Amino acid sequence: MLDLSYAENQIHCVTNFMDLVSTPFKGVMNAMCWTRELKGDFAEIVQKVGLSGNITAVEEEELRELQLTEQGHFAREILLKDLKALKAHGASPVLNVISYYDRDDTFPFLPTDVYSYHVDRAPVPTDTFLCTYYGEPSEILPNSQGTQKILIPEIRIELEKLYDAAEGEFESFLTENFFDLHYQAKPEAHPISCGIGHLWKLAVDHPQSEVLPCLHRAPKEKSGESRLLLIC
Image 1: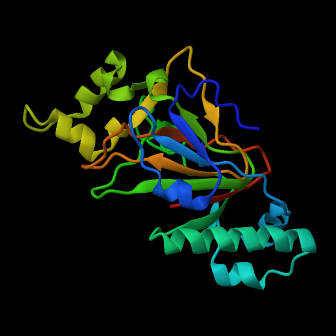
Image 2: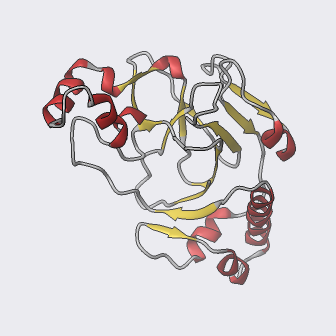
């Protein structure tokens, strides 16, 4: 069961794929969730995929060739159906088995990896879709409960030390290095788990967007447990 008590009207739930892709974001609403209770053994998919590195992209051909139990078969059919639906919508979904993401320690005062609350940005209108089928789920942070890190005085001071270009271009420097995409949760913040099996649509920062982009992050994985994630 999803706990959306701290969502502040930011999250809208739907009951089918068509409503998910066709309902526009508006007002403060910048996240949409097709809530589902999925059947099948997704752990079996994770266990039988041939892993290559910390992130393994699972191609449809490999998925179809896996030798699975009945419950694993149910899980595979759901994955194939989700991939097909998103592709028909014009998206480019990727199914990944994730042991962990690479950490960014280039600037310890402002890491820019996906474990940091961040927003997605695109030059054209688009949305982010994601679903965790197995493992720790992604998290959403209500916009009012996050502070853009470049506005935090001690972080901004460190960024100014890095900046050595002509005066007046500091904001461009922040954008070009993606520093402006990252947020810090306020002390009283209540992150919202995306849960298992639910398909999400998140608002992206793009030139025609009429809503704020959605703050989200990857979770810290449990030791020895990979995630099965669809994202596009």
